[in-house]
Image (cartoon, rainbow, N blue to C red; front, side, top):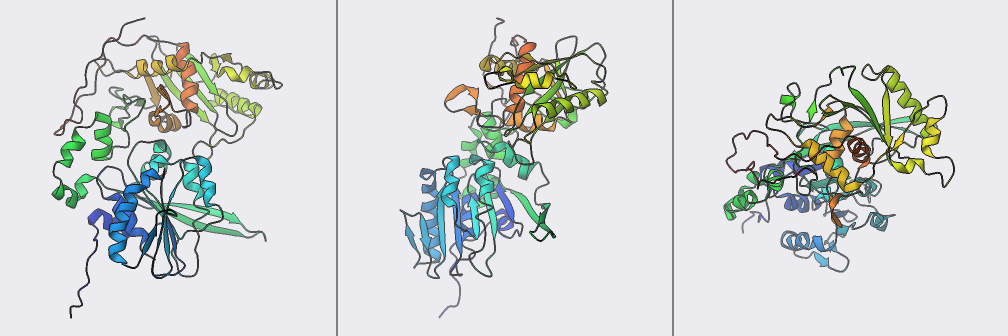
Amino acid sequence: MSNEKRVIWSPQKKQEEFLKRSEYEALYGGAAGGGKSDALLAEALRQVEIPYYRGIIFRKTYPQLSELEDRSAVIYKAAYPKAEYNRTKHCWSFPSGAKIYFGAMQYGKDKLNYQGKHFDFVGFDELTQFSWEEYSYMFSRNRPGGPDTRVYIRATANPGGPGHSWVKQRFITAGEPYTPIVEEHNIKTPDGKSVDIKRSRVFIPACVFDNKELLSNDPAYLASLSMLPTAEKKALLYGDWDSFSGQVFDEWRDDPNHYKDRRWTHVIEPFEIPPHWAITRGFDFGYTKPFSVGWYAVDTKGCIYRIRELYGCTEKPNEGVKLEPSAIAQEIRRIERDDPNLRGRNVYGVADPSIFDKSRGESVADIMARAPSYVIWTPGDNARIAGKMQYHNRFAFNADGMPMFYCFNTCKNFIRTVPALTYDERNAEDIDTRLEDHIYDECRYVLMEHPVAAPLQKSLPPAADDPLELNAVPRKETFYML
């Protein structure tokens, strides 16, 4: 009788790298075809020999779970012939008594469906479809069902989607791939003692080129990805987190190689602002959500430079610091007193018109205008579509690679949030206001104070080696001055 084990599924190289990680959180993927779903399903099986083990894998909606359910039926049933799946409860029950669930959070409130429950393993498939609030809520549900179980979180993702910005910030830009990102949390106990706990996370990149089995079974899949629109090709073929489907400002470029010469990039190194350039300050108020203040210099040709920012956000994306208007005004005055590019300058302020509302008492604008700060605002033009078009007009490059808008590389929150904005599915011409759009709005008021006409011709950055034609020139568009 043979003692050889029957192989149901074996990981490929990148999947194996993902499966062997010991960090509390790990994100796998970044492009299409990397074998992400199989890796997540396999990871959930790790502890099913323990009777009290409970695991759960999320997709945004239950209909999206069908492919995972079908694939789990192939892997799980083959590995554990006596395992049973209840499609009504979306739950696998294993001979040991362990269970693996499939869950969904179509709406933010759906996270409360898991209140009071515990899961040793929590997985998210297509993490960029979830909000930070939905993802982070499951930290509280990620606890052991008994002794000797491992408690951790795993996720997969492609660039794009409503959660693109926070996922990129947490896993992609926070550190190098394969390198653990370690955070230390200091916790005060009821008896006054201090406890330090470290938590780590890591990003494991993968793309279709890492999935040899897929390419062997379907060599034409590469052609399928290369036929996608440019943004989707870059995101799904190569895992480009700066380019994705649904991106509002796909003309945005952040190229460190051109920070000095300012060609073919919107992000540049800071420099001393000439004394004769005008300075404008923009403001979007927020309390439970972030507030945003931005300072802009306008040169003699009308080009706008974002030179400083004050963003009232906690370490959690899209969560405000709850500062009173008077405290914000004091901080604005401090910055304009201490910043060499702002000190002694005449600063013109434009803000969200809603701060002038007096229907519920003293307006935010009146509070900020009081002594000792005397921060004065003018109502901004809140035309949403016209304001969005001003971004497009200014982000466009001329033949020399020069746009009409630049951002100092010190304005980290503008660089993080504005390029990550996507379109609203219910209003195809506007951005999705459920995203972190506060800097976008604040800057929009400033751009509407200095409108420019649409360029008659747009230029694209020079193409590098491009065997799959990722940078193919799209259909030319013509604009007419209004």
